[in-house]
Length: 422
Image (cartoon, rainbow, N blue to C red; front, side, top):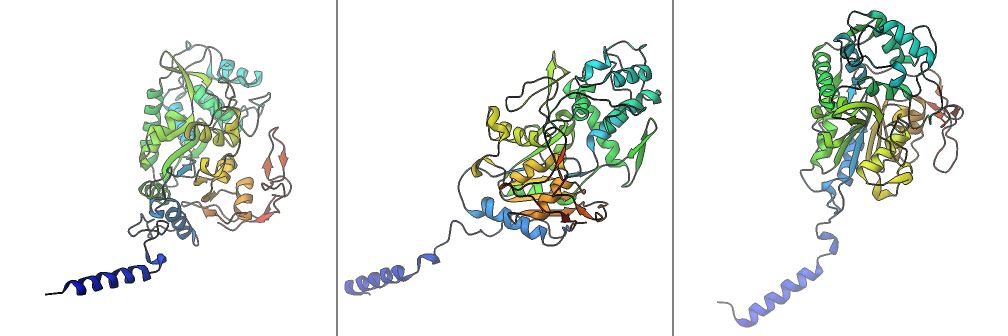
């Protein structure tokens, strides 16, 4: 039996031992914990890209042990999360199944549509079908051709400009706005249903398949990238709030985003105004830009605006500006210059899927903050770009559409860059 003095001595010794343990021996709240959500090591990424993304997830996600708002990740959709273009796929399916409704006048579909385009569409599609009724585009090759040529090239089949006027080239492009405007008269649910049927067709087609619309040949398949599905899964498991920000019509994007576990709330696209439950040609604005003809799409700087307004709840003109660290996304992923602004805003990782788009790849290869992750497309990657990206001269697009140098935040010009991720 221990004496009272022995018990006291033992307690004193224990206390001394406790005070002798260095403070660093206690578990750090900033140290990654065990069993952190991991990216699938069986899915190939270029170089050390997987490890770099995993490091960012560990640093910014729940494994960091840090408290605070959930970090946000934002992904473009077409050729970023999937191979090929879901808007092209949806329009192609709609044309092959007579889902475009005759407008009262083609000029009504876009404020920027030229008289030449109005005339070409009216001639090709005819006036026999009453407004609001389906056009027989599955049989009328000329009508399908004019619609798809304007979508693809902003030109008529005769080569005339399809759109004209003034717009901010870093906020919108009329041909992008024109797709949801073409579906005016449908309900949002009907457009989602059309997109889902196109999705089923595209996923069932073999990789490499092509399809014909009118006389146009285009990709006939779409595939989810396994690496991006895995990245989104891992980000969500690590506590990130993950969004899709696409220049597709939002009902079309919603038909696809569930395939990576994202719901309508986390799917941001072109938002058409509805009237009596049906889509109209009016498009919701952003950052104080009025609702109407589509002057502010989730396109280039418009994607930043939509992220700031819809995710971080920043209103008015301030939504067009880069925000402080706490009000910016942790990860941004894109494949084109249409994505460059929001991807550049990311504070943890800028994922650039290489499709040889100058402004995006100039920033990726300049890698000013050491957090750019450039990766070839996961399916059928593009060959190495010959020569260099013209970063120092014409790599970026100005608001008036002219080509200008790509500049860093401090105003310095990025030198021309050699392609490395191919």
